[in-house]
Image (cartoon, rainbow, N blue to C red; front, side):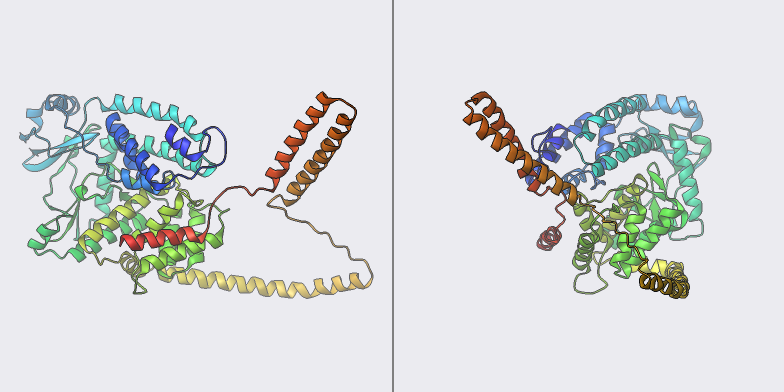
Length: 534
C-alpha cells in the first residue's frame, strides 16, 4: 500500500502526481502477488477480484494478478469430516460411498466424489475454520482502507470503497452454500428447456450452509481442445452456446454464473455445455440490463455517441469526462479490434482497450458491474480458446436480433424522434408571438438584456489572484528599496522574503495544472503496442 501510494504522489504526502514506468508497476505487482499468496485464502480471493478491476490498478498489475489461481493445499480429511458430520450427521448413515481424496480444492472449500441415494454426487465442504480467518482478514482490509484512500483521487476512492464493500459481500456469499444451492436451482430452472446446457441438480436432503451435495456430471474440460476434437465435438458451436447462455443469463434472466474459468466449465460427449461451482454468482437489475443492451447495440452499430451515453448512464464513465477524447479512445479501440474486415471486432479487445484507459481516464466500475465485466472478459477468452476466429459481436448481434431487442431499440428511437418533432412544432407555434412582442419592446427602447457569464475553469478567479499577487510583489519591492534607503536592513529582509513568496505564488498561478493526460496519442501508443504484440 505504501509503494502504491508512493507511485501516485511525488513526495508521498505532498507534491504533484507521479508517473511511473511500466517496469516499476510490474515489479510492484509481482511483490504484491507474493504477499497475497503468503497471506492466505482471503487475500488470494482479493487478488483475483483486483485482477478484474482496471479502474483501481494499472494494466501491469492486472496482467500479473490475472495469473493468480485459487488453489491451496487441501485440508486434512479428518478436519473436513468434522464439518460434514456437524452439518449432516454421521457420514456412514448419509452416504453409501465416499472418496476421501478431494477431486478439487480451493481457498474456501474442497470437493469430494461420493454416492447418495444410488446417485453419483459431488460433495462440496467448506474449509475448516475458514470463517474466523476470513472475518479477521476482512477487519484488516477495512482498517487499512482509510489509509489508502488518503493517497488516491476521488475517482479511485469511489472504486476502492466499492471494491472493499463488494469483496466483503462476495466472499461471505461464497461461503454460504445454502445461497449457492438457491442460485444454482434458479439458474438451472431458467435453462430447463435448453437442451444445449447442462447443470447439476442439488440434493437438498444432503446439503446445508457448510456442505453442498450436487449431482455429479461428467464432461471434458472446456479448454481441452484436443480431447474435444478427438470426440468429434464442434468447438465453434460450443463457443456460441456458451456465449448465448451468458447473454441470456445477464440480459434476460438477471441472475448469472459469475466464475466461468475453464475449471468450472465442461462439455458432455453430446456437445452440451456443463456449468460447475455457483458460489460466485451475481444479479443484474432491470436498469443495468437495459443499458447493457444499449451498449451492445451501439457497439454493433459503431455508434460512438450512443456508446458514451450508455457508459455515462450506467455509471461507468464520469459525466465530466471529455467526450471528444473519450470518443477518440472508443474509435481507436473499435478500429484496432475490427481488423481488416469491418465486422471483425471483438468485445474482449474493446474491453481490453477500455481497461488500459480506465487507469488514465475518468472511468470507474460500479459494484453492480464488476462481475459482469469479469464474466465478459473471461468468457471471451474461453471462446477464443475454442475458436480463434470466434466473433462475439456477431453472436451478440444475432442474439439481440432474435430476441427482438434491436427491433425494440428502433421502435423506441422512432417514438422519441416523433415526440421531438411534435415538441419542435409546438415551440415554433409559440415562437412567433414572442418574437413580435420582443420587436415591439425594442422599438419602444424598452428592452433590457441580462448576461450571465459562465466561468467553469475559474478564469476570473485566476486573473484576480495574479493581479493581487502582482500588486503585493510591486509593493514589497518598493518597500524593500525604501527600507534599505532608510538604513533598516532587518525590515528590508522581511520585505525580501515577502517579495520572494509573492514571486513564487505569481509563478505558480501561471503554471498549468497537471491533471488528466487525455491525449489521443495515449490510445495510439496502446494501439501500436497491441499491433506489435499481435
